[in-house]
Length: 212
Image (cartoon, rainbow, N blue to C red; front, side):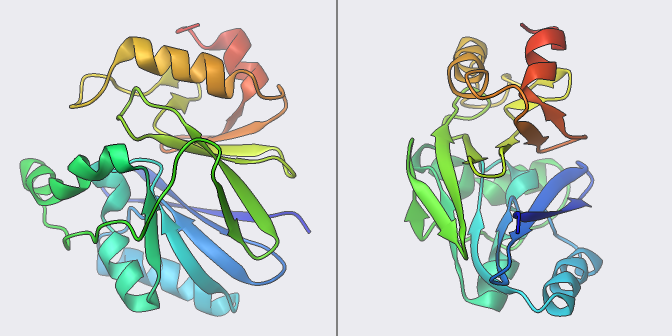
C-alpha cells in the first residue's frame, strides 16, 4: 500500500497541513496549522475515524502559520515535534509573530528531535528522507518519500512560484540554490506538495516556473 496523504487547509493563511499514514495505521502530521477548535476537531476526527495512531509532528519550517497546532497535538497525543535547529529562533518568537498578525496561539514546545540533511524519519512502513533547503527560512526542510515519489516542501517551492525571502532569515540566492540542488535533481515525475496551494511535479516546475 502506498503512503496515504490527507491534506487539511487551515488558518487565515490557507496553510496546507498534511497527515500521512500507511497500512500500519501509524501516522504523522506535517506542519500543524490548526489553531481553532473546529480545526482541531477535523484532525482529531480523521485520526479517530481511521483508527490511526499519531506518532510525531514534523515542521518543514517554523513560521507561525505552520506551527499553530504544535502545542495542541503534542499535548493531546503525547508525541514529540521534529524540526531543524536553525529554525528554533522562529519557534521562540512564535507568540510575537502571532500577535503581529493579530491572533493568539498556544506556545509551541521546543522540538523533541532535531534533524538535518540526509536524516530519516520513519513511521509504520514509511520512510521520509530529510533535505535541508534553506532560503525561505534558515531551517527549512523538505521531506522526500523515495518509494512513492513525492516530496513535501513547505514554503520553499510552489506551483508556479517560490517561497518569500523577505522574512527574517530568508535569502533569495540561498533559496534558488536549494531548489536547484536539492529539489530539481529529483526525478521529474516526483509529486511536489507545497505549504500553500495545489500540488505540482518537479518536471512541471523545472520547465514552467518563472523563477528558473
